[in-house]
Image 1 (cartoon, rainbow, N blue to C red):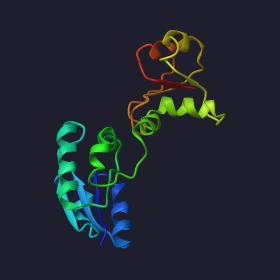
Image 2: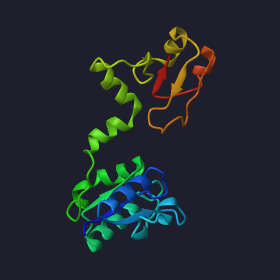
Image 3: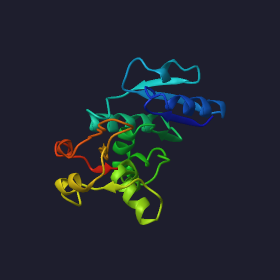
Length: 183
């Protein structure tokens, strides 16, 4: 029976992955840094493992995953969160001596993770995007003076709506230092 380690079992997005792989005949090990989480209670998880939090202890997290891969002979390890993905991709070569990490290269991942870089790539390829200003390329004061209001100020490296602001006047834009300002 093929074996896999699905990380970030505390994330809701890991549940369909765990279920789908188990139904396809995999021995599924759910991993998390949280003792109580949805993936550990799933009837589709064969085993459960804990590891250090990837955000606060990236080295401890990586070393634990590496040891698990060495001793449990997983066919692949699949992170379902961007933080654990980034940590593992940064040392993909070391991990892939023992298992497969079926995700894109580190450089590609980092471009996709950063909303600002993703928008720039889309614009370069003539993909329609909202009107966008990049504070790393032009002065935030110039942006504040010429942008239509209200704006959506969006941090480039956050998930979902985390860190968003909607200033209704140019004086409020001066207080933010995000990577993307969208009109």
